[in-house]
Image (cartoon, rainbow over all chains, first blue to last red; front, side):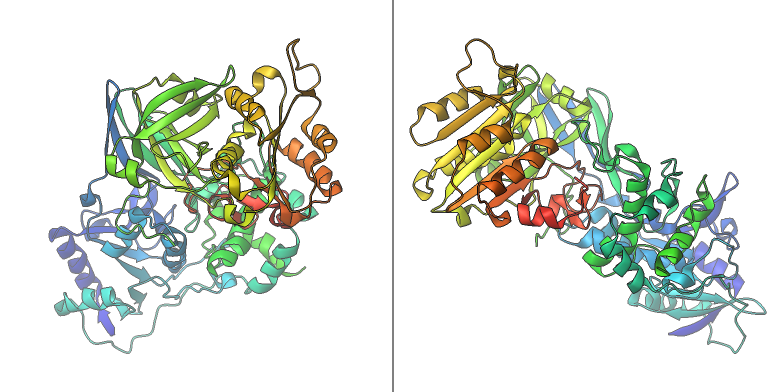
Length: 334
Length: 282
């Protein structure tokens, strides 16, 4: 279904939903940092900056309680989390690179054992994507087969138009329902042209070729070359829309506390460190190799998908200037 | 495929510590009984599978289930105190409560071993992942041919399950070869002296109609595989278990992989043939 919505009606839509008790998560400024966070009103929303972290945290929070415990003498009581943790949510203004990562993550959280923390939020959330009008040097969505107007992962997709307002197109029942339930705010599509969309300066990688090289080059001098300077800070994983590795830790006292699922990063030395002291990935190049392999080979082997959407965040935050796009490009030319 | 819809897959079962056994100065075995009667009656696993054991307030640790699936009503884990969780588990006393998630991972294809001779080769703290299978086989003794156990540790004190080694030594249907590293033997020592691969070579079990099950530190595995090869074992006749660091145990948290193989899902039990196809990342 295709529709048009002007800016004023869009603001009304978000404000109405918030009034109805629906949690609206959108890019907003938090102490100078743009993040996808719940907003109290449409006026808090910003659409001209890529949030510092990706939209995955709407489904997979940085830290999340997975149970609580209480001890009394030799007895322990464990309490499951409250299902009210997962309210109906509208995730709004999601960049195509962020929205595209969500269905990619479905694979790992739903194969075999079901991670309901992720999946229940998926069921309860409608994703509204927003076409991207500005790219920087780090953007490379086009290189991994996506684009600034890619609708993958979006239930409803908005494209900003010349003269204001947005062209809206729905791609799922949830998207249709969002329009149907608020039909007075949407009008028929008009002929306005889209604002000029972002043009990331990258050529498309031959991902099959990249994977074919990775299949054969677990041992290769390239790994030392690209990652010996990695400091193992893990920032790349924390800003990534597709990294899904996590830790499980207890926080609390002798008497009571909670068990939490926290984001983790394959760049940390402790990530694979055995109790014996042995570490199968005992150097930064081995850990960085795992990062590339996981994204461009292992996830493909397992789920037939690439674990990178070219958002460029890891390139922007890396303190030592490791450029994943440059590395994958180098591999694709081997 | 498992079906766990609408269930918190990270929620542990509560278990009571029923027995505490000190194996060595720093290795302890806990016998655990499920508190929920329904779980106690219905919990099943296969030899080789592992679980996530938790000390509430400290966190979870991954160990194999060290008891045999033939012994119903309880499970056992054996661990060395080396970190926050294991130190906390060590503090538990009989009657205390801890958590268990599992069973996870694959298992030994025990049915394929029926009618064959078995050679178990273990070093140090790596006996527990084989002990589950050893007792499983001993409890179904008629189904197997000769059973040989080659087990070694640095010193006499470091041998785990000492009371069971004695039992295996005394029953007539197990050939036990126990050894300690040179210098690790006291005046009363009645076993061999030498490293596990060497002692295995000297014991020279026949490869004919035999399966070898090997578990130990990486260095022991490295030197044991060529010995088995020399004795005529093919890679299809040799199994081991990998013990990578894990958190979820469910194929999600992303750290136990060896190449594209997830030890928690595709393992922990692998044949030497599978092992040799993997990159050196374990």
